[in-house]
Image (cartoon, rainbow, N blue to C red; front, side, top):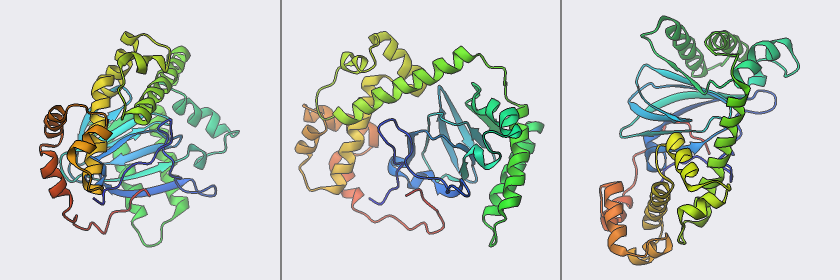
Length: 307
């Protein structure tokens, strides 16, 4: 199945380069529905991201929070914040990912006074809604930036001018006087979560216990449960099972292996349990999913994808 997917390294950092050294800015026009399993899965990047929901509705998981955003709204996602988007329908999201260094060199006054306080703050995201006058101004500026990227001759200097205007509004709506301990604690927790998730990705075919997962970061089982529940709203074992099911789904459409073999290869010892959990997750039996997955996907030529 020709889905797209986010590509990450072992820490869940996105590996795609957004722009280049001369112009660290990239515009994307994406439909979340076309991504693998209809979601842009957990990832983070040192760049900041601005997203506008042009069509549809999606759940946005950012750090510890979850928001359902509909057409006409937007969001700013800060640097190094882990996030995930998922949808149950076609959801078109023009978005931009750029380095704050585009706006000012790191040693410059603008960076030190206005940019660094935002990316170093505990503000993980800001929602843009037309119902709030201040956020509406942010939203209007964002849509103006996005519209410019669709023009035949994109003006980089106008893009940066608008980004600076939008950043000023973001700065004015950020608590720059954050508690440093809280910020460092948040970074440490995110790093621990990434380590545990990567352990699951690397070892899902074999039997893994909660104790095994906790051992990777030298924390108690209760602490690990809290980190997963507070950050990605599930338990470690539920995340493990869901990851196994996703891997099984890929094998069902990419190979001719038997359903029993695929269940075994993805960590399920009991075929009945595998089939039951698979249907709960995908609303199809493994056989139905395999048959359905062989059907060609409709083309969506206007979408620019992260590859």
